Each structure stands twice: as structure tokens, then as C-alpha cells.
Image (cartoon, rainbow, N blue to C red; front, side, top):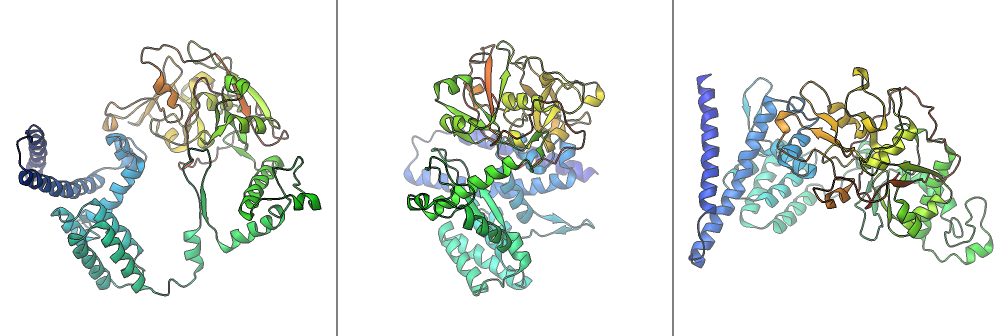
Length: 511
């Protein structure tokens, strides 16, 4: 016990001394230094900078052995790092991934084990390789086929580290790619499990022109399904938006076929759109968190009247107002009204635990997505969260006491050392972190409502008029009317934390 206390004190003293040394270096004047002296100092700083991650990973691995994310007040280690140090979740993921392969490990029986990549860890600890080298080596070793024996795998890592010490990341990657090719020149044998592992449909970040890039790797079964759909709906003359009356069923006329100037790629895009509309209009998609599966777009009454501006979907996609109006031409329309002075929704109260469809629309209009700071989950992936008090503890299911929260964040709110929430005087949901994660960070999530950041700090009221228009563009008027009170007390579906979020348009919002 005595040794452990001394070790802890020594670590604290060393970190304190390191910080003092950094302060001392920062205070040094460099104006009178020669070129040789400046280069030497920069070389030393670069070496120190390359070594520090190894120390950080070792401490992070020890922290993971000492405690758990719930004890820290978070749902995952990625959230612990992102909240505590105000870094992105992708950066937190990178640090955790590298710590898992570069930090010393501990066996179930307690003895110390070498890192998964011992040669890389040693080189990093001595400042011989930088973060770019580490990333190339880590990703390359993850791609080494499973049939490679341990001795060969270790030799590959040593060779990569030796290459990294004397070369840049580009040369290292070229060498690594050649090594992987020589290991398996014929490529992997087609395998059902391997195909299933690679299946994916990925939506990329929305571009500045509003377009959205999507990449896909489909299994043979999935492509067989869409192959048949495209054969029907992507045929010349079908689903052509340039036709006054596009053909979406039956056979297009010869005139429609002759006047179709679209490429195959454009026809397949239009077929995807038509297929999605048909699915939404079928009414067979069920419900999503209390509302019929539909496209929900929030915008302002001013933008609708002026036909200028944007709308934002429940998933965070920004849409030009012209497209919003076109979709609204065959959709259910709703009006959400908020009080100008307080930002509170007017007259939507309920005595049951689950928020009504009308209340969910109001929450989407007000919050836009998960209200926990830093969470990017859009409104489609959120539940109604009792902000002031849980329903079981006397909380009310009134719209001004509710907020949107994704499933994992909703479950993070508890009286056992977790997060707590409250509603401020602007009707914004504030999240108070547990002590282990409280670094004075923002209490309100501005990810889905960036226009709040433009509001002067002393502005007591939200900008714009108190009336907010809402367009529920559900791709068909046969959807169930979400203004009704009918709902199910069955458990809600699990939310997907990967659901995209997105910015909201300026001014008062609607959904």
C-alpha cells in the first residue's frame, strides 16, 4: 500500500513538473536564437511531442482497468474522453483504438502483458515515429490476414517500424500496401461471412450545394433485389421528374421514352426516390418513436411566404425552400406556436407517460435533435425525455417539461451519480454533467440549433416572430394524423446513436 501511494505521488509530481517545464519553455524568447538553435529546439519539441502519446495511452489503459464509464458518469469510454477533454468522438475513438494496441496490458490473472504491437509502442515511447506512422502501422496490422502465423506477423510489424524510422508516412504506406499484396496476391476466397462483414450503405456529409453523396457495398442478395426494382423504375421513360405527369406504374408511353434524356445513373437515382415515396405512402412502415414513419421538415413561416431560405429534416438534412414547398404540396401541414418571450410551446399538456404525436412534433420544432451537449443524433433517432422529473417520480408529460434525447443519453439521466437535466428560462434543456465529467463545458446543445450562438449573451428572448410554421412532408396524405392522441404504451424502439443530426435554419423553427 505504501509503495502504491508513493508511486501515485511521484506521478503527480512528475506531471506537475512537466507542466511547469512547458510554462518555462513557453516563456523563453526566441528572437535572438540562430537558425541552428531554432532547428535544434524544434527537433527536441518534435521528439517530446511524439513520446507524449505513449505516456497518455499508458495512463488511459490504467484508467480503464481502474474504473468503468458508468462510474465516470458516461455510457462509453468514447464519451468520457469527448466530454472531459472537449474533443470529437472520432478523435476519442482514435485515441482509444491506439491505446488498446500500444499500451501495456494486464492478464485476467493480474500479470503484465506486452502491448499488442510491441515494436510500434517501443518506437513511439522513444520518439522515433510520429502519429501518422502509428496510424499507418496500426491499420496495416489490422489488415494482415488471419492465416498469417504469429512469428510472421511480428516480423511484419518490426519491418514496418524500421521503415517508419527512416521514412515519411507516404513511403511507409506504400511499403505496407506492397507487403499486404505479397501476403495474399490472389485475394481472399469468396466467403459468405466475409461478404456479410463488408456490406454497407454510407451517407456522407452533405455538400455545400445541398447534394448528398452515398456509397454502398451490397451483398449479392441486396443487389438482386434492387436490380429488379431498377429494371422496372429506372427504365427509360419511368419516374421522369421532367414529365408533366411522370409514369410511376404501368408502362411509359413511347413519347415519354423518346423524350427521356437522363443517363442510367440519373434514372436509377429517380427510381430510388420513387421507391422511397411508394414505401412511405404504403403506410406499412409502422411508427418511429411515436410518429408514423414520414419526412418531417421544420422551417419558418417567413421562409415559406418569401419562398427563400431552407428547411431542415428530422435527420438534419438541409433542404432548399423550393423543394420543401414542392414536398408540402402533397403532405399533412401542422402549425407549431411558441411564446416569443419564453420560447415555450403553448397549450400542449398530457397526463400519460409517453408524449403524444402532437407533442413530438412540437419537440422536433423546438429542439431539432438530441439536447445533450455534443450529441449529433437527429430528431428521428430521439425519444421524449422528462426534463425536470421522471414520470414515475411525479414528472408531467407537458411539452414544456419534455425534451428530445436519444436512447443512450436518455438512460444516462439518473440520481445515481449520472447526468441531470433541467429546463432554463428560455425553454432550453440544460444537461448538468456528473462531477467526474464536469469541466465547465456548455450545458445546452447547439449542434442542431447553431443560430443560438448568434444571439447576443444579453438577449433575453429568441429572435423572430412567435409563430412557427411546420410542414410534415410525409410523401402522402394517407399517413395517420399525428395530431391525434392515439398511441401505444409498448416500449419504444431502440434509438440508433449513429443517426445523423444537422443544423437548423435561422430564426424561429418548426417541424
